[in-house]
Length: 417
Image (cartoon, rainbow, N blue to C red; front, side):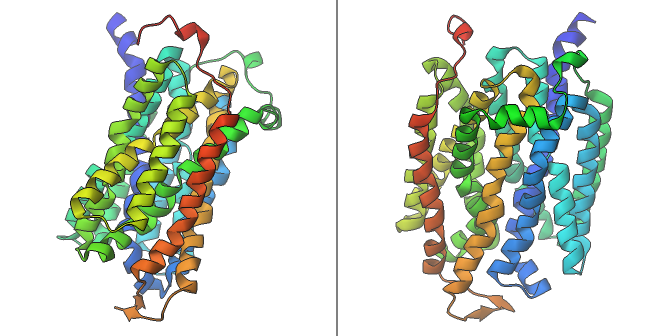
């Protein structure tokens, strides 16, 4: 029994983080593999397909505050199991529908279900692990999530070469149902006394809205994440395919280097923060690093080998968001861990809501009218022009860091990493 108690928190974290990994694939791999198919299927241009894909981000984003409150109030077990199932059902509807309305509805349902994943993981971490492990586990969570598009995404891409893409993604949806069953039977909730819980959504939300630090961290996270939400999750594969004249599978592998870098760098960034005993320096490193890396990717003619290195490093630097989430958890009482995680994650995903269709509109505005296989054909310069928006966001992220307060807990100063 003693062994079981020691291993139980890790097992619970493992089941919830698998959900985080699962929904990550529905957010990134699906649009990356199907963008051109969706353009042809629904007769869409870049703005239209960007809007369709962004419905996920729209529902995901605006669910974050109620998700955080619900997790604080009712715990992660039931909500995560139901959300996993909803995510799977929504994805099946999205890939199977021949009607735009139903495809959009499927994308919305997937986003609603996926909205619980990351916040539920942080909730389990905050509830079941000591304070000195929060940054490390937040980093490991980001690692597993980023590994999803790399490992599972490549596998799905390979299967699509042998089977119809609708069949492949429907099988993946069935796996979501199995995962839901596993979460239901293996995750437990920490029981708080009633007086320790926020009385209602208005009270918990008000406490966060009145905290300037929470707003700054949310804005920093949103700006820092734009290369992932607007480039890696949507336009990156097509851009790299056109840039190097390679096949979609090769371009996807290149694009996935951002996720590989994020997976490798998440625990590394957490470790650096612990060694330096601060949060602000890693936040600077993240913002400046991804600004330089993404600027190099989009503005300069890089060789394939250089591109591989720069994309990987860009993924590493994106992990400034892991430190931002950790700082946010350290800025509010523990019983608001779900609500603050939801608030910051809402801001993070807002970047996809805005930039995916915005970049599409910029592409359409400067499009020269060329067509290929029934869908618009955009040039490298047109893509680069749209990516200036992302660079502007990263510059703003750098200027936010000086306004943040240091949150590294004083009681951890004497704890050895």
